[in-house]
Length: 139
Picture 1 (cartoon, rainbow, N blue to C red):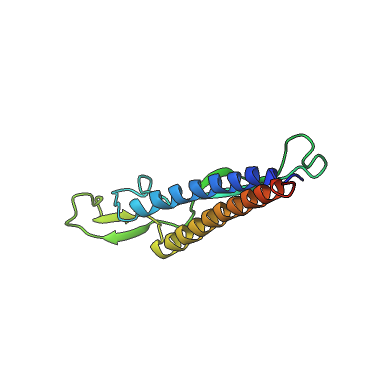
Picture 2: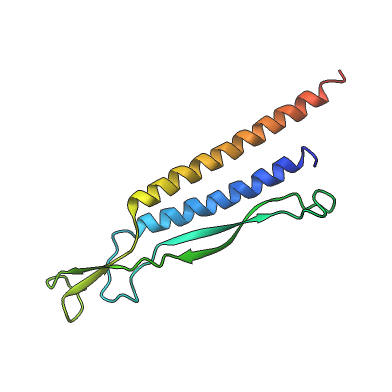
């Protein structure tokens, strides 16, 4: 595997973590949204990552490895039902529905995604420095 492939691998990881940060931000932005029916209530979303690795032709056909977002799934945790008969969005029984977003979990996801992104930036910087030093050996 060429040292140049490190840039591609880190780039895929940074792209995946960027999607993770965006999904987390969306979840946090909708954490306080309420609705009058369980079907219209916002559901927390989470990205699913998949590795990109071709063991047989690794590095020979341009396939270098990395990660990609295979999809974004909705959480299966049920929405919270609250009795608020005075709320204008309450249903006929007086209930409103809150999203299944766990703010603490979302904060942990945000911190982890940010640190993963930062680690990949540092990996690219280190690889760039190694390539530069390699070119200076002959001088």
